[in-house]
Amino acid sequence: MSDTPENPTSSAPPGSRDSQRERAGARLATLDELEVEVEKLIAGGDGLARFEGIPIFIPRSAPGDRLRVRLVERRPDYGRAEILEILEPGRGRREPPCPFFGRCGGCDLQHLEDDLQVELKVAAVGETLRRLGGLGGKLPVRVVAGPAWGYRMRAQFHIDSAQGAIGVGYHSRHSNEVIPVDRCPVLVPELESLLSTLPGLLSEGGPRRLDLLVGEDDALSSAPVVPGLPHGEVKLQVGDLEYGLDARCFFQAHRQLLPALVEVAVGRWSGEEAYDLYAGVGLFSLPLASKYKRVTAVEGDRVAARFARRNARAHRLGQLEVVSRAIEGWIEELPENPERVIVDPPRSGLSRRVRNVLGAKAPTRLTYVSCHAGTLARDLRALSELYSIEELVLLDLFPQTGHMEVVAQLVRRTEG
Image (spheres, one colour):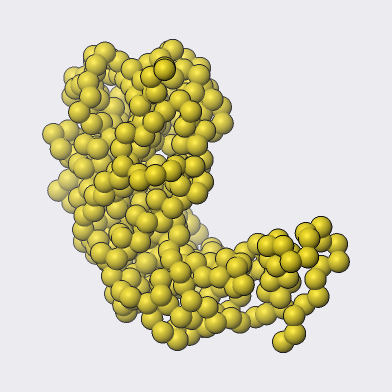
């Protein structure tokens, strides 16, 4: 196929890198299939290959794979593709253990050996923090991993009754099509065993989504209410503390790594006053209250905030105050130069307003807990003039997916 003529409206000088990229982009627009070699994994789990310098992102690929792929999305500066044929496999590629992998959108990396997944995800997070966060030099990184299977104690299932029969499963990748499953090896056994019985408990016209959470002694909580399924409070033991919550509440899903996450985030520090923002049911607030004389937990979700108050009362933590308000509406009440602040925002990271106030109020120690390397990198860049990074701990809370939890311990720079 001949080269596509150069874009006549381009302002890039002939022969420049931008001009070459524009020609490559024009060629890419005429192609349906490519042969590529995957360079590396990026944050989120896709493999990265290149066509004449243009990045091509390929789900379920592996570094070193030589592939024949079909383009499914073309943009001027990147493309996305799906695998048609593995011409030569990269290292660590395996047959996925789950028969639904490839159709189900729940997992990204089952085609890679478990230890290699951790290695590649750590490298991808580090690259994202350097590229988007402007972090230079060797990062002070520590890695914590746990069981790669049978770890997930909470799950969100989607329900399809369009064909008359009830199907319970997960959305397919990049669509709302429900892929029914009768097994899911990342779930704790108590949850996985329910998959065969759930369709019989559901009826046509019932909920389209079902959240399930397993607590201590196999206690189950579900939301919304489904006849035949328990839907009340369950207890979860994390270290020396017990937390009450139900399936409506956000809570980290990796049963075995929860104590490590709390230990890393709360740390060894103690003092007069600490603030836990996006506090949920108090996962970090309760242990903070054993180290600080006054703790304020702020949580916008009313159900989670109610459980946080109950948990504080159950442990007789009168020094812990729970505020049920959205962080954006409360943040101006943060005092000047607070001693300690922990933030655990959603995937979207800190809003600009919250970032700006944190920068202005300048906590002495800021602990940032993040499940999204890109938004963490953005926020760290915004705070980089005020803070230095003391430690980054990467916890593999999401095995078989492309995500990792990052706990960044930031300390305010001293003047001079």
